[in-house]
Image (cartoon, rainbow, N blue to C red; front, side):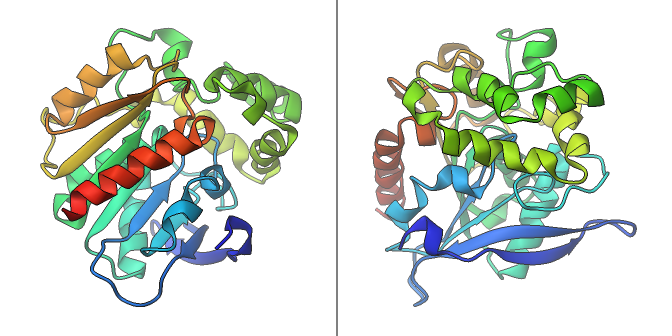
Length: 293
């Protein structure tokens, strides 16, 4: 199954008495029931389902797979609400309820990884395993000021609508993506346009600026250490991630998730799953095998 052959699906999420949002998701893989828990892929800041296009097809032959655009990103709606890891965790809960899933492996990149941890802390019984690709949310002493704000994914200091407008185009997107890749040839026109398109959507300014306006809503600092999730957890990190350097950040996450094994992939930066997709897929495959054994 190719990524492009999967149709967009949407569900209407009533996230509060005043707000609802149309959320885009994809569903892949075998329909027949097997006993393997499904995977739910959750993208990072500024990204979308398509950022997983080199990963999902590798696993869709053997199990059920889901991916969704977080509220405010991709083709999901972008209402003027308070964006936070807590909101993303509530979205995961709504989706699992919609699909009647109560045993899922969350595969999260960057901000999607932080949202996955937040959800697993709140609802540990629902999560079979966490696979965290360069997750954000904990920074140690590696970042300060503006650097802390954007998790290294879209690192432009967007402090308002004027700068947002200046940034919300292919040139601005390109400048933000280049530092998050070790293999620069992956940052091609197709990827740049993919990241630039949602910036034109109504409400994008609210979701994209929220981490710089309320960085505390996007950190995991306030969770208990260790957190409430005691199940299987795996950290997969790009060795060349300059914004979230593994030697500094992995120990922070292991305070939160002491059970987490850590795997560092060479010649990969922050967007590890796309930057070094073959190595990432191999690692994810062996993680899934280990869970079944």
